[in-house]
Image (cartoon, rainbow over all chains, first blue to last red; front, side, top):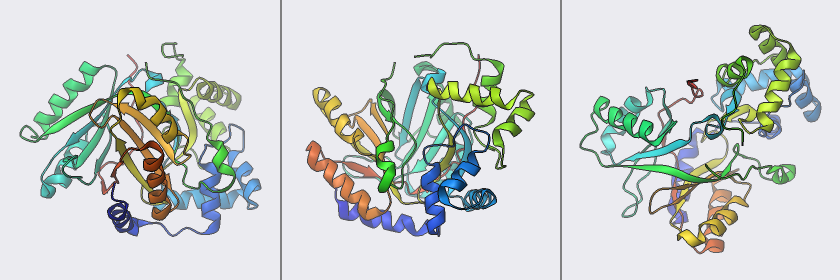
Length: 192
Length: 155
């Protein structure tokens, strides 16, 4: 990979970075691995950070409002819940149609994520990505056929990358410095 | 693994109804318990069990990409016999949160996240060096979907 190109790409993306102060950063670090399962989880975080519980709640609400936190809640593992056919679906679509097609694909509940990413030619011509979780391979393939018809994707090249083994799955860790490093309490079970 | 065990009514509600909208109140679990008509202790015990069994990875926040730090989807093309050892090197980085084998010439796919773009590039560079494999980095340019969780179908 040409890291210089990547860095330029990342820098242009990072224009959307939220303005976060030291307390917000500490708060993000404190909740990255999940909230404690106890009566007053936010009070526990407040103690840890040396602020009070209402401030923790207000800051979390603000982070949600700014879109830094996409959602708060129970993060499930699809595979363990029986959704074992997990496919990354990638399309090579004309640049001027990416947004339209991205929005078309995203309106369906079974599409869990939908993103535009860069092409890296000649190895990787695909610029639109989405994820589908299904209970079986047939189920996912059927849904793809249906998507192709619904969003008029018949003429556009695509590939379906089913997952095989899962080597790692955990929440993102943005603050890798300090005490969080060893909290890499990961599960290493393999896909069935 | 507990893939096929029967889930209780309470567990189904916890798994499906609280993927978003988790209460931002001093006592979130008690609030959920009240909504579900059970005790706070039952909610805590059930979540603890679901977490220990691996059905729940955590109760907490999902961050929107590109708002905090820098991240990218990355792929490698690795010979089958090398795949496990390369995956192990990739997994050893705390920056990596997902790492899957997929059906393609690019068969190893992972997400790497760091505090800054400089740190991310240096981590990816180090991975290339340690694995002797080139990384295809595909950072997110546009997000079309607001991930508000996943509607589980109990059939």
